[in-house]
Image (cartoon, rainbow, N blue to C red):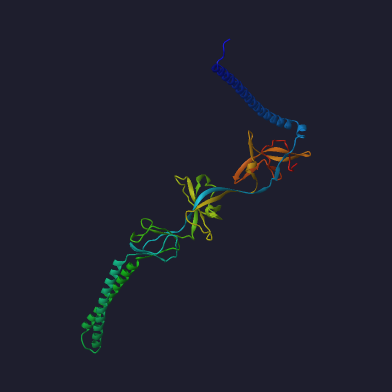
Length: 399
């Protein structure tokens, strides 16, 4: 008999261990697979048991009487006013925007007396333009005026003297008339130059630019040294009349027949937590080629302080019913036959859940209008309805 070496003995031992581990792993995997199959079978059987139980309960009233009642909450159906709103996003706009303009041709800015955000009043000085040349013109014309005044004074003096002599029968009538004509000529010349002085002074005064409205300085793009001619192009100062604001909103064209001037609206300015009720004050007559909508305007009450370009949520009343049934939309369910709700019905001495097919109307917030299928006085199941089925016993009292 041959002797087994140490090396051979080690190989035999390793083979035996490996074979045992393999057999152990195979057994474990087999048991795991068997467990998963049983779990799957159990879920399938439980589902079938539940479905069969429901079918039995529906068909066998004696079995239904033995089941445990399901706890639910009930709400009595009532008629009430119902309103539907078309909710759109609008913006705060100003009805009166003024771009400051000079009364003359404009010029170079020498000083600006307002900044963005300032409140200004009508007639308040906004900026001053360079009027150096205009003032020089005023002085030049005034110098002419002084010379003509001196000549007029001399002519009047000569005329008075000549008239005194004429009254004393000294001198000629021709000389008197010549002196009188000279006075009138200088007077006319003086009047003309005085008018020129007034014009030159008015032109010089045009360097002062004033606000033509009350409001808030919205934008200032002008700086000292800029050429200023007013308007919205180039260097400009925009003043918004914050006491005369409006909300503008684009209404889709398919609502044209439901929205009109005077339609009530609710406006929410969510960023500043303000809201107010108003009415549509203006509707554009044209449909926008790109927006496929029309513009509606809503006046902002004078006691509401808003800023132009703020976002507004506009709710336009497009449908109302003074007396209708509306329920929480969450209680509405669907199946292959359509929409339905579950109501409580008294049958014998038990309260049973009954399926009620309904027809719906408008949805407003979390309320949906029911146009048929429910009537005032019905007991609508509003809690616990999710797992109910038609014919199941229910209760409103916890066991």
